[in-house]
Amino acid sequence: MVKVDAEKAAKIGHLLFRYMRARHRFNEKTDRPLPAHELAALIGLGNTEFDDIYIEPDANPPIVFDGRADDVFEAIIKKKYRALPSWEPELLTAWHRHVISDGPVPRKPGPHRSNQAA
View 1 (tube, rainbow, N blue to C red):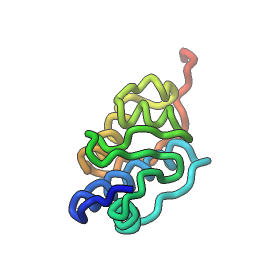
View 2: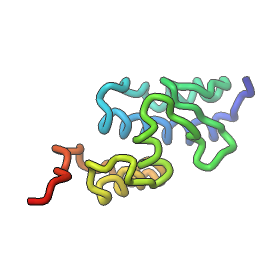
View 3: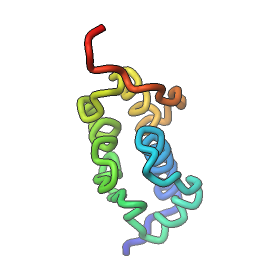
């Protein structure tokens, strides 16, 4: 394990916390995140796996794989909103901004939109 400096670990820890919060909102079967400062401390020690989420500190963004919620990863990190077809693209865009750019916390996802015409 390669240690990461404290400042970089803190930034990645906050980003990972925001992603894990989004993942939990869209997929309630996943665990709630640890606090950002605890994630940062673990990242600083060289940890790269958190609840099947893998990070690479030098990648941009540093979250590179989610083995438990690939659909959420594709939608929120990679901006492939069709990975979560029952959610409004505007809501997914807001969550992407929150996770990647520390934007405001979007509203909690409500009921899924219907795929049927009214």
